[in-house]
Amino acid sequence: MDEIYVLAFELLGTAAFAVSGALKAVGKKMDVLGVMILGLTTAVGGGIIRDITLGYTPPAAFRNPIYSLVALIISLVVFLPPVRKSIGRHEAAFNNIFTVVDAVGLGVFTVIGIQAAHAETNAHGVYLYLFVGVVTGVGGGVLRDIFAGEKPSIFVEHIYATASILGATVCIILWEPAGRAVAMLTGLVLVIVLRVLSAFNKWNLPKAE
Image (tube, rainbow, N blue to C red; front, side, top):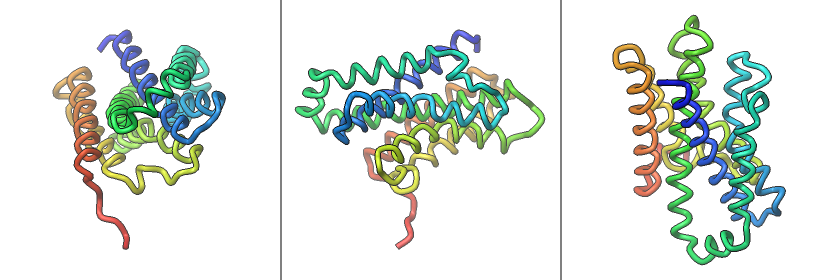
């Protein structure tokens, strides 16, 4: 996969997570700064954790401001009165959009995290790839929920981190025999499908009673 495609994936994930963060902030009745900050944090938070884990400093979000700019612009668009009014009038539809958009962000950042780990080092094996992929995928969402005053959804609601783990595992397994492009695409699709199906069918892991 050429670097231009990797950049496109990253921008897609950034946009998806910015929308999910901004929608969360709008639902919490935050002001414009809150909406932009939550959108930005959701979009770049996982990538910052990834880069710090890999020893890549300053993180890419600071080296290349395009990610932050995309996140801020999209968050601002979500905050616009016509958009917010539309969200209010069609809450159920926007909840579905939120779920799908968040799933896209989760899948994109999971496989991008694995790609980044492979690019940085081949010395530390599968566990590093799996950890970095998952933390890149779920990190922004965890920060989003904490900033919004909620318990992170990965711990309580549907299959979220599990989808990232399974997609990352498949991506890692396919990396050598199938090639980077096929591995990333397969992992991405698997994460999105699992996350969307679990959300709409209310699939949950066993919980402590």
